Amino acid sequence: MKKMKGLLFVVLMVLVITSVSLWAEGEREQVKAKNVIILVGDGMGMGTMELGRIMEYGKDGRLNIQQMKTIGLMTTNPADGIVTDSAAAGTALATGVKTFNGGIGVDINKNPVESMTTYFQNSGKSIGIISTNTVDDATPAAFGAHVADRYAGKSEIVRDYYDSQWDVLLGGGTKYFGPAKQDGVDMIEKFKESGYRYVTTRDELMNISGTGKLLGLFSRSYMNYKTDRDEYISTEPSLKEMTMKALDILSKDPDGFFLMSEGARIDHASHAADATSVWLEMIEFDDAVKYCLDWAEENGNTLVIVTADHQTMGIAPTETINIEALKNISVSAEYMALQLKKNADETAYTLESIKGTLKEYAGIDISEADALELQKNMSVDLYAYKLGWEIGSVVARYMGVGVFDRTLRAVGGTGGHSAAWVPVFAEGPGSEAFSGAYDNTDLYRMVLDNTN
Ligand SMILES: [Zn+2]
Image (tube, rainbow, N blue to C red):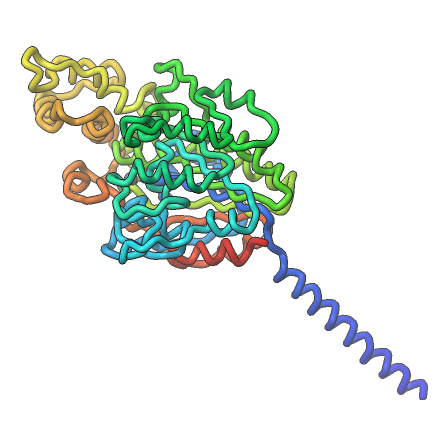
């Protein structure tokens, strides 16, 4: 009898232990996030991150992104080729659908597809979208607009945003909101009439408090490179400040929120082979990540994902790179382009101003042959952003940066993107699901499945 009792006890204990561990397993599976923050480094490949790390912290230092425990990798090809642009890549991330380059929020037949933003908005969460690019550019647009041509559709993207009535929309680009690009309608006024508070400077943004929808447009086009902020005596907020303010507002929603915050100019600086600006934009992005990780740790219930849409220009530290000289450059290649002087008949930039500018801002004594070549490549019809690409490539060559050359950039439809796999870092409830190697269209489902 005693023996039977002992056996019964053992059986009971086994049952209890098994059910407790099954329950724990079940509990683990049910850990989901209430809030989602996705930070996208546009054009941020792993070499880009390494350039930022080495230049900012040295070889023994660490980026804040490196605190994140779960790591995945994504392939990024669009439906119509090998190398993606930000429109097809943004659409893949936001909707889980593969599309053609240039397509925003549409499938290969140009039919609109639903983004996670719409899904979360319909489930009662507050929505925030931030970019250091113009807010109507490809990555932010993929999260809420539906146009078959990212460039021709910019005015329509702004109207789609208006229809979406997101809670927070911050970035650059008043250009496409004004009457000139909106058939006589001032979209900023329309946003205000529908209840948005509107800010245009860092100080105005920082003084915003409480709840209520917010539109912040801080420049006519792209926001300033971090490299140039002092030169321009910039009144723009940083990516971290925009993200901070968005979290303040969005987190007041008891149903949770979704925030996408884009460090867009990592890509722009990469196109220009401007390693100095890549470094500073990368660190600006990493600072925004740090703020989000600290915020999530303090507030809980928040899944933080850091990723990129694609890699740009094959950027990575090389054995030849002259880091000290690059750190001494205090303006972007684009800023240098704006200092050039045209000749009397305005058909070309003068050799004197080309040589003088490179000497003054990059400390480079450019050869006569290189100055002539640069003059030939810099058409006076090119706008500053594209002129910056030409100057940047020459600076990169003199500094041993080692990136794609201007010929490859000129022939490609993406202007120098590559198909290198991009990283995904995840932290918080549900983050374990993001480990492994998968396609960029898989991220959408993984985010939805791990959110309440
Ligand atoms: Zn790009």
